[in-house]
Amino acid sequence: MKLLGKVAIVTGAAGGIGSATALALSAEGARAVLADLDGAKLAEVARQIGAAGGEAEAVVADVSDPGDAERVVDAAVARFGRIDVLVNNAGIIRRTTVLDITPEEWDKVFAVNVKSIYLLCRGVVPLMAAAGGGSIVNIGSGWGLKGGGQAISYCASKGAVVNMTRALAIDHGPANIRVNCVCPGDVNTGMLLDEARQVGATPSNFLAEAADRPLGRMGQPGEIASAIVWLASDDSSYVTGAAISVDGGGNA
Image (cartoon, rainbow, N blue to C red):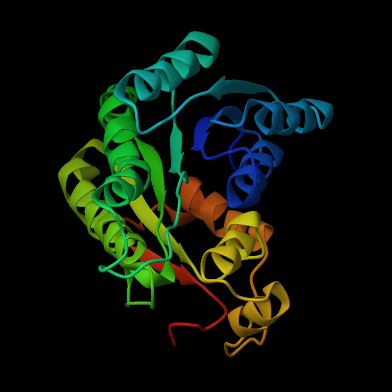
């Protein structure tokens, strides 16, 4: 097991990439701390981990809120005594142009997609440094590396995630804390179907367009989780500051 004895926090853990990541980390031996707003789905992920022989602590929290973010970190330390891995997965998308996004929507996207990373890293980095190191994996997007249509706040926020990752890697590499970013393409999750609704597209047509890339299909949550597990483990011990596309060639 690549992560035996490690403790991992996963935000946005109730579904999609987050739940797949929590299950994959647990399968590699990590004890998981799961954070999300959806308590019912979060409890189900924790139940699945327990049924497979793992350990999980579920924390219903809005990780864009400073108090809630602190509570997640405190819960990890109280239950497991340490934090070795942080996966900043929580994210939302608003499909709008600059002309039709409200200031409130803009702020919400940046709060969830960017501020939450700042808050969790602020809480976790000192603990990792004191313990001799750790791994932080931020979830960006292909649209954090190049622009996309009708998604100005999402593109801007995910671009910030990519560059935050680089800055964190520079600052905390001397403490043996590696910080990397996974940039998924279109992945078969509920968020993708929500995008179709937001732009008024027929789901089948929208999903067909999402599969238009060299590999000819959308990604699956487990495929993104596999990349995250690799970055969380010692298999990637000399990798930091990287933004890794996992997108079926969409950005090729």
